[in-house]
Length: 267
Image 1 (cartoon, rainbow, N blue to C red):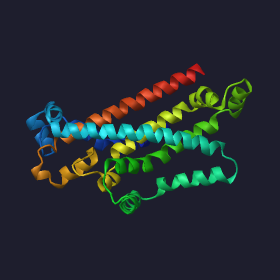
Image 2: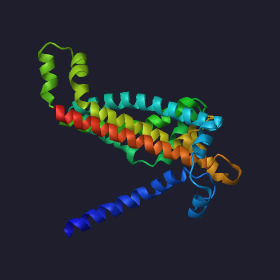
Image 3: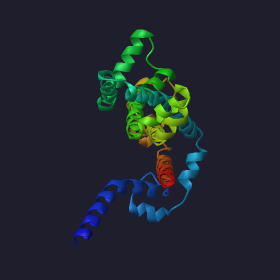
Image 4: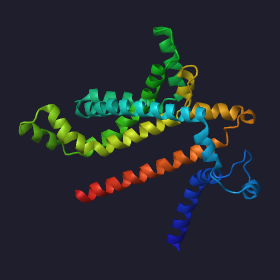
């Protein structure tokens, strides 16, 4: 009986978390602006919204622009975050602790504060507050600390003697880093990379404050579409886009878990 209530409790929590997403996926197959059970059975299920999504050139451009932005930000933040995590780990005394504490500030800080501060800084320094470069910098500010937090635990789990042994066997510090340290912390790097992509795709506030004129990400477009829902015929197609994003994330998470499981078995 105790096990039954435990399973029931966990299932209830999972249902509470995922019921809205499953509803979204379900209604991505119903081509109607009005979301209701009656409309779903009256119109029926089809792939019409997915066809509209891929046939909408303007919407697809926004999707590709957002993916390109997320890719650029993820690569840069992974490089910066990994280097930062290694620097923090090998720093001695209070220096490493101070840098680690400073890294946590953007994580805890309200995103609206970061966005306004970023706009003010660039407006004062270069007299420009909206450009693609500023948008990338803003996304880097919110994603890089999470990469650091993903890599640091893997560095702490690593046997520190392995790096020193590589140096003793004649490897240069750089070669020891590439051949010994990076393979050991690769799962953390991969997690940080995925987290950076997710945060960049999801961000609205930084993007809304810093994006150049005529440029939209998925989040800013969705907000604009919801604000003028009555005049926007692309709004139902966003359900299909959201469902695709969810399915891709599920596949990536499953693939990551399979990879981690195989690595553990090899060890």
